Image (cartoon, rainbow, N blue to C red; front, side, top):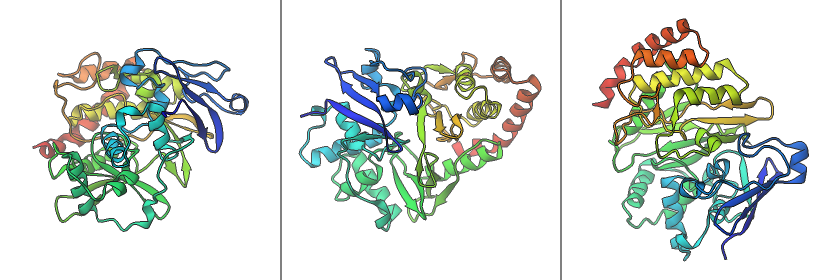
Length: 375
């Protein structure tokens, strides 16, 4: 029988209850204790009060009938592929389970800090395995091509809750947790090295990113490895994407950078450093040709000490879109973006014209060499 109800936990405390409605939406209510001691886990959609919250009917189309903060816990295309293959391997038909079941399979291993009980997740532990990254890349390729893999259980347990479209796994080294990415079937063998070069360039531009490395390979130019910012010294950090915060469909263009900057101002209480980080990233994405800058590729993190803050940036690499435009528009434009457009967004967001003009020239100069990597 599909799940009808799940409990949501944060750092061992019961946040509230998820329950499926008759029309396949998932309602949520904060627990009595959480209303006394907790905080709103999604300030715009789930204010901290004693209500039964029911998401909009339209969320069934792109958020699986969930509020965005919970939809963020679900895997994306790669993780969903793994979960579906795993379910078939144990005799469960993927189309016969609901979104609460999928959250139960994620259990306590999802991105961010929210956990779901009762859990159906595996007890596999990655730190007990000696990893051969070239072998894992080969098995990931098999899975993408719908071929049989005798490593499916292992891959699922180290990657089943991962987001994004590219194959990736989670690893733990010396009590630090990392994500390792592999090329998809449409990527070049240099995809890992390219993302690493973009990471180095972004940090030179002053963009806050998690520490990253390039893993050597005998088969290609290497695998991109980045430290998880939702795991800090063993503590899980709440992570909510812009799409999750706004209940938006990240698969389609739905935001402008000015809207994103106003969102940062509202949620971080006008933290100027976070505002500047997003501005730098907008300029970087334009000059470095990262058009896949959709609403799920920006996020907030929450800590008890700091409240809501902009997360470190991630998924910065060369990318195009099938429609040839940035997914997040700049001054209403998806292409042919000018310095004037970038200036307009920054000034409307409250940054000084002198600052934005200086950043534009600085980032334009530092990213110029990345054009050669796109060839």
